[in-house]
Image 1 (tube, one colour):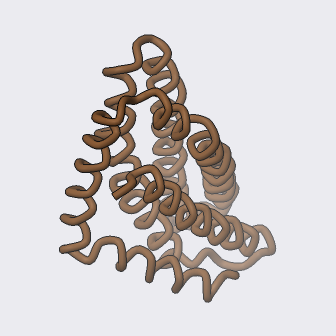
Image 2 (cartoon, rainbow, N blue to C red; image 1 turned 60 degrees about the vertical axis):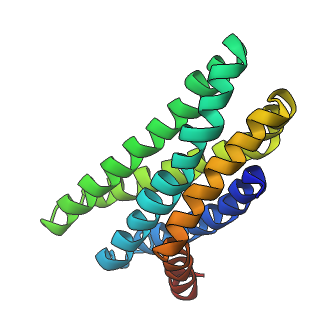
Length: 184
C-alpha cells in the first residue's frame, strides 16, 4: 500500500464534501431554511472521515515520522504548518456546530455564523489539501528513507484494514454521494 496515494485519494473525497458544504451555504444565503439533518451529516463526515480517519493517519504516521526524522525543517513544516491548520479547521467546525445550535433556538442572526464558519472551513481545507498534495507529501516521500516510508505505509495499511472491517470508508463515501445528489 502506498499511503501517500491513499491520502491523496481521500483528499478528493474531502474536496467533494467541501463543494457540498458550499452549496448548502449558498441555499442559506438565498433564504432557504437550514436542513439541520444535512448539516449534521456534513459535520459527521468532516469530524470522522476527514479529521479522525484521514488526519489521524497523517498525524500518527507520516507527520510524526517527518518530525522525528527530518530535524527542525520537518518539525516546522508539520507542527507550525499542517498541525496548526488541522486545529484551525477543528475550531471552524466547533464554531459551526455552536452556530447551528443557536439557529435551532431561533437566533436568526447566527445563520451568518453558520455560513462564515462553514465557508472559512472550505477555504482553509482547499488550500491545506493543495499544500499537502503539492509540497508536504512529495517532500516527505523524497526526504524520508525507504525504510521509514515502508513503516508509514505498513501503519497506514493496518489502520485502513481495521476501518474497512467496520465498513467505515464505505459508510462515509455513501454519505458523501447522498449529499452530492441533493446539493450538486
